[in-house]
Length: 142
Image 1: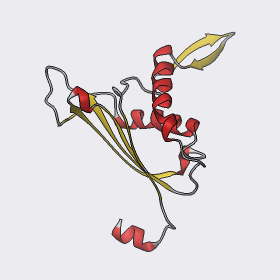
Image 2: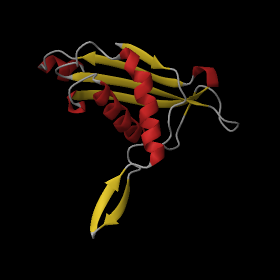
Image 3: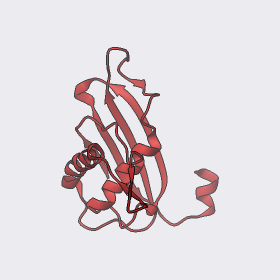
Image 4: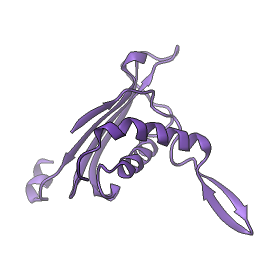
């Protein structure tokens, strides 16, 4: 399954949780900007929700396409924050909530990239594939 979310990808990530002390104990919470970013991703994902959550091993390929600024060129790698692993965590959490799979632990293979593009090309390109049975061939040809 390939989908493209036409949106400006968020630059906040799930790693930006906050902590405050409540009655002497730490209380972790999501800042409002993270909640807003997750809600936006979920809103864009919902139309692509599969009929049933995917089962078994899953491969996830994601291309994060950010609008280029004055100091960047289109079709150039984005080598600044946010890190791809933090972006991926939030996306996988959102895809789990929408129902693409049962648990994001099912994602056993993933590829992520991020680049600068023209504003009309911004978005998140997502490819999700169910993988077959693990064999020695996967190791030798993978």
